[in-house]
Image 1 (cartoon, each protein chain N blue to C red):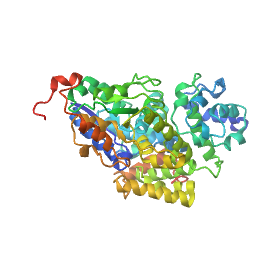
Image 2 (cartoon, chains in turn brown, blue):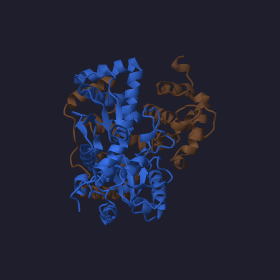
Image 3 (cartoon, each protein chain N blue to C red):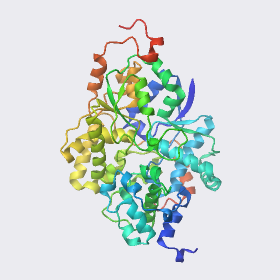
Image 4 (cartoon, chains in turn blue, purple):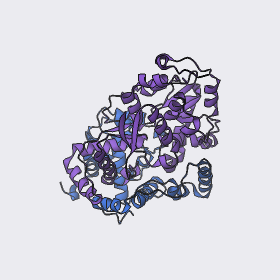
Length: 188
Length: 310
């Protein structure tokens, strides 16, 4: 099948090829995923509904949804799905797809946070919490920023925030390694 | 002496330093040699998989390759590090084409991964490799009367593991708490997600998830929540004030790492377990332990009852 004739459902299914899913088209709409999901109250479409929407080819509606960016990757749905669809892998696939296609709704915080995180690791090889402050500012505006600053001070007072990021020792090798997996120009 | 390649994870260097030190202290007491993996890097958490799955696998593969050189299995104290390393390991073992691609990348750092390393969560090592009986024998101060809400978190009991634990109704955390003399309370959501990085991406959703957990633990009359993951600890402990502000609740329940509770039961000084760096004071837990007269022993600990103790 060529890309030109590929349906949206096929595109997403192909992205899930290596995840061990039995295929979105084997969904029986039982809603075990929706009933299991701890974040479902905060999604505009339930996971069950989102699967049906992908299968029905409702691309624009799916990409406008906050559902997959509201997934915390807890894998509870994948644990329980009786058809082994692995909805958590669908959520990952849709996150990646929406970033690649530049179709991320601007109000969402998750995509920006993911990018910040990835850039931080590309630079130093290790995570560094204060480096993610811009995502908090974006999420909560000035009030949110002040709130998070206060939160940060509480942790700092207990010695739980580092002043400078830690680095892996062979950071140049580390970066060359990752650039062999994919070009980093677009990310870092 | 059992030896492992210990993968601390990024949180261990600051936000969960208390987990790190209490892991090393309790591990040493119980005959575990945890040799820190040389020049380890971040496991990628969830954001890497959000952006690119190959990058996520590459990050984990570097750690696995470094571990393979030592000939030791990897132990990770963080649920997310454990899940990521375990997951990437399974993928690399199952897919030779993926392994070849990743190994081409690893060459840039003079590394190669042949799929020979096993990945364990720290709690599994304590429960299975050290063993509950062996732990009970070392207990000097059984945590009698302490009601603990065991919080597994999510990724400790999620798919594709080969450890034989029941993901739907696990009880190894409860078993471990009983081995150190504590009472494990039953409450809803002990394996439900803490909200993880939704605390950034969708704050209200994450706070609601933490609120549900706190409500369950408090209604079950727990004195303390025990966790096995730095992100769970951060969300459930440090965001309690935020939960209270958001929902008008008044939760103030200590949240400690299971290794800290184990360490207290093994007679290790609270300070050496990193106790004192919490946002919610764990004093009620320490008081509860201090109130107990030193009992002769609990269960199997009888055989090694310490002499010369007051």
